[in-house]
Structures are given as C-alpha cells and as structure tokens.
Image (cartoon, rainbow, N blue to C red; front, side, top):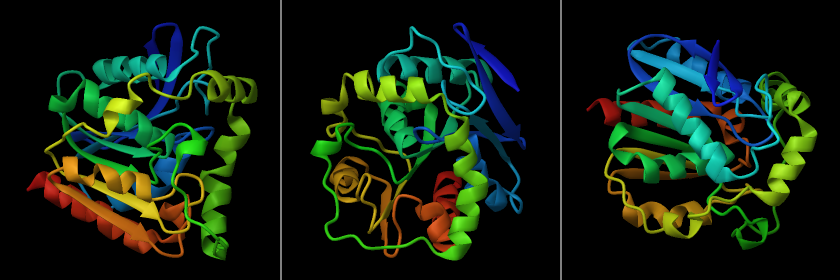
Amino acid sequence: MICDVKDIPIFYEEYGEGVAMLCIHGYGVDRRLMTGCLEPLFARKTGYRRIYPDLPGMGKTPARDWLKNADQMLEIVIEFIEKTIGDEDFIIAGESYGGYLTLGLLRKMPAKIRGALFIAPVIKADNGQRTLPQNVASTMPPDAYDAYKHHIHPGLKAADDDFIARYRRDGYALSFENEISDMKFDMPVTFLTGRQDDIVGYADASVLMENYSKASFAVLDACGHNLQIESPAVFAALVDDLLWRIAR
C-alpha cells in the first residue's frame, strides 16, 4: 500500500481490523523487522489493525534531498498517522530508532496514544553519550540468525546507503532531545532492552521510568540489540502483557 506524504510515497503493509497499532522499524532496516517479530503474535489475536510503514530511504520508500533531519522525519510520521489512522487513538511500537521517533510522538501527540512498546530503543542520538554495557561477548543463537536473514538483512540491503549515511551524519537527533527525559506519560508502556546490547544499551532507557506511571521495564540477559529474535518467547509474553494492560 502507498500513502503520499508531502512528495514521498510511503510504502506500508497493513493487517487486521480494530484498534490501530503503528509499528516503526529501526534505522537502515525496514518494515520486515517489525512484521517478522509481531505478526506471529497476532495470528492468535483479533481486534488490532497493524500498520507497518517503511521510513524514507528504507525498504520501498524513497528518500528525498530535502529530508535532512529527525524533526522532518517526525513530521512525516505524524502526517502518515493523520492520513492512515485519522482521529482514532492508537498503540505504537518502535524498535531502535523507531523507538526514538516514538518518544517524539509521545511529546507531540500524547493524547492520541493508548500505549507504547519500546524495543531496544535509542534514547540518546549521539553514540558517544550512550551508557553501554562493558565487556560484552555474546553471539547470536542459530535460530535467531535464521530470523535475522529473513527479517533484518533484506532491509539492510534495500536501504538507500547514501541517504542513510548523510542523515546519520547531519540530522539523526531530534532538536528537543534534551526535553525527552522530563516528559511524563500516563498510559501503559513497556521497555524491552538487551543486557548485552552494545548499540544502545539498557541504562539510558531506565532513566525514563520515573516519568512513566504505568511502565514495565525488562532487561533480557543473553540478548543484544536484536532481542526480539534472540529471546522470542519472552518477547511474546511481554508484548502480550502490554496489550492486556492497554485493553484493561
């Protein structure tokens, strides 16, 4: 499916009917990362309309020369929401950089969001400012590597490498990032982090807990930045728990 936002044809996939759930993938990959880990969970659920866009420059959505920073990227996501979800409240799931954009959405439109799932989220755009675990030595289990080949690697190959490099260098951070740590949100939230995640870590996300009155926080051992495929059973259980809390 295609949704025209500004002059960008946003490609997305949509499944099911009911409460809208927007699922935003991470940086340099595409929607398949999210469909791969979430759609199996919804095979036994009804009542949810899952929406999986490809961000500009990733997957099947083209980049544009004028798109230079995270504030513009967030504006694109907001307009996409307005066109595909409209006035409905919705749930949001964001992985890695998608989690970072989710934080931006919590600031820009908190009244519309019924709950949020953060999967190994970026909290600080600057790699040098992130609190990372030390002496990490973990390997991806064989079954997770199979999922990586099907759900993550194809997105990496499909990305616009020139755009990815330019955007990461010049505009990766939201202009209001310093305000994120002070935001409050009172709907159900789950933070899923990996104990061995040496990309974004887990400690920076834990700092947000005091401002999220209905938040759960999990640090999964033997998991890195791809925790959703490295510990799929725990991942599924914690997503189920979040959906139950939102429905309740």
